[in-house]
Length: 409
Ligand code: NAD
Image (cartoon, rainbow, N blue to C red; front, side, top):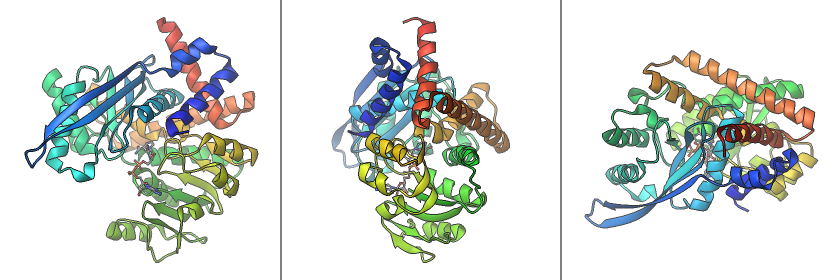
């Protein structure tokens, strides 16, 4: 089972508890539109190369579709379908007026020059400009795409449709981006974490955290948790990991990452493998790298009190069952890591209104939305006696289902 099938599994589990019926289940799980485009560009060498571009639009009953655009050799329509659906449920959990989408270009961006990447991005926009847009589908950065790529998308789209900054989010601050977008997913994780810990009777100060992944999500989370008094006892990235049961010196770790480009080799702790990180003794484990890193076997060994999902789909459904049986609380991705898309929503709102919020306002609005979403999910979990993940899907399916029926099938 891949991460896409994982999303479908969790969706169906909740849909059956809600007894929505097979027809509505099929309606809600089938993507609205799957676009595949041919992207032929001239490389710097003069050679012509053809790539495949994809955009999966899953659901728009609650508003324009929203989701990342990734550049990766393993971009496949199948995986995109699952990730697009995940975005529908995620935007619904935090009650944003959006649906879900996902897309990408099957390519290895490390083998392309900046100019080639720009040509490829602009070609993609040429081919999908009629199906994306501020009121249709709004892409955002994802694996191997960044604010510069979003700037190219905005520019190319605007050539067809007139000035339209709201067509993408995650843009550079100097080109209609939002303050606070960079740290938003980590900050959202922190806000949810505080609420869950309060319900569990745990204090942030002195609690131990292990974080897999030290990119956008993992590194901001590490910094914010540290500022809140938490102890980072283990951290890893693709190159390796480091741990210190007494707590890593986080500012020194950041200095090391700045110099070396990795947490590996940090002298303030001992080396640790990914497996050791995921099974580290701690209160909060935050997988913030890849999908399905927690399998059935590892789940037996997890020693955290709770798993806060920073990555999309880090827990295999089998592992989810094991963690539940073992009493390890899992805070699901569609709630925990929704901070990024929430601030993307703020960026879209600011663009449409031609104004700019200060960071205090962004963070305060984010905190309000994350807290409210957690409260609703926790309440469903208590009354229906289901895990937080199922409760979050029940909340999301209810919202999307109602909008679908009200609009008319
Ligand atoms: P990123 O590319 O900035 O960072 C990824 C990190 O994971 C890097 O530190 C990388 O070294 C590490 N990594 C990669 N392979 C690994 C491996 N095998 N073992 C350990 N570490 C590994 O990506 P990101 O934006 O931080 O996203 C991380 C995850 O969070 C993804 O699943 C993404 O879909 C999800 N997510 C991101 C956002 C966002 O706003 N960026 C929002 C929601 C969810």
